[in-house]
Amino acid sequence: MLAVLAVLTVTGCAVTTDGRAVSIYEDPFAVAGMPAQGGPTGPRAGVPDSTRAIEGSDGGYIDVLAANAITDIETYWAREYSAVFGGSFRPVAALVSWDPDDDGRLFCGMETDVNAAYCTAEDRIGWDRTYLLPSLVEAFGPMAVVMVLSHEYGHAIGQKAGLVGKDDPRIVFEQQADCFAGAFLRHVAENDAAHFTLNTSDGLNSVLAATVSVRDTDPSDPRSSHGSAFERVTAVQIGFTDGPAACARIDDDEIQSRRADLPQRFHAPGDDGELPVTAESVRTIFESFEAVFALGDPPGLDLSGVDAGCPDAEPTDPVSFCPATNTIGVDLRALAERGQTNTGDDQGKIFSADVTGDYSAYVLLASRYTLAVQRASGMSLSGPKAGLRAACLSGAVTAALSPENPQANDFAGPVWLSPGDLDEAISGLLSDGLAASDVDGNTVPSGFSRVDAFRTGVLGGQQACDGRYQ
Image 1 (cartoon, rainbow, N blue to C red):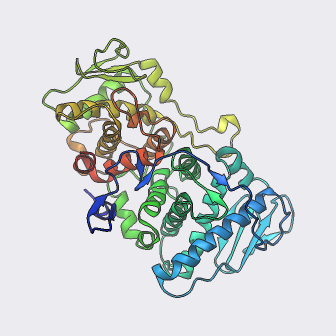
Image 2 (image 1 turned 45 degrees about the vertical axis):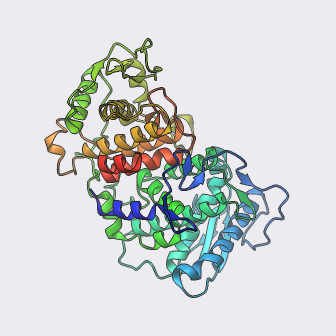
Image 3 (image 1 turned 180 degrees about the vertical axis):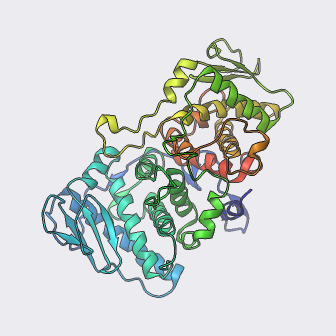
């Protein structure tokens, strides 16, 4: 479907000592070739703190955390830089901490704000220690600070390596920085960082959730420069899976190839892209799924509730598939609740990865429909591969509903994907993972793997899902 898929598929392999190529996706419980497991996440106990100087520091917890993060990041780049870019690594010239309430403080020639940034002109990284970083710690834990600072250091690496030019769109800088952050997080997850650890289950899930929380909500807004949650998580996953050399290959053409068939604008001013979950809307999108997959024996739709008495599957509220009757049961009221918009602002949160809306519900319907697709192909509907196939095929049908897809007019009807829908799907995959579960509702523990499966379907279509999750 897209040229980028070939890159992602080829680079998703490891080579053993006997020269045999092994797919990193063979084990559904793995995370980019690493075991998906719990364990410590965050600052290591008993490790001496960094002595890296910070201008304006108050010596408090946040600045100590930041100094330790920068030290580990610079240790990583001191090892990797020359191998990837040639030449010698030079650390940033200075680190700066500020309280935005202090008047007269400047960073990069501007008054300090609730922000974290890399100043190209001065080769300095700075951060707000009073609001921004503490809020990230409160919402997602200390590793969110490590993620933010590794992103800012990624900007420095891009500049020092000469990867970006004045004419490059801002999104290129941001995607490279997210990718470099992902490469560093792999270093931490491999237990190679002096001050931090990161497990590949809830620890990595929280880091990705922090990335989702700082996203562009309207890609057509000229001020949007960081990318959607889908794009940001994609870049982090490329770095985590394929390393910093893959990040260096991100440019405008590569980004546009990923965006090619995905919606980049709302249809009209004031349009929020939301389609309330009703019996009519569920029937309509269900018909679109039928057109996309064109099964000889498509599943039936029952809006009276999930089948609690299905003889060969456990019910999965609010949408459930019963293989014995080839029927998808829907608890319409509960599904509508899943589809309500809630960004977390009403709870007074500065950051929230709880991105919900209509597609939070419809992606669940899609995932249960894809179980019927798997049934029609004679595949097992139980176990982790069935769940990841469901997520992958849900991504495929999601992309098929995009108005930018040249084939969409053949089957989408009145239902269209809109900006924000992919982010809603990503948020759900990171939280409960129901859209990446098997027929009994069992899913893999790694949100990274669940999102990665969905992303494969979005970018590569059904063929990529069939090849990856055999």
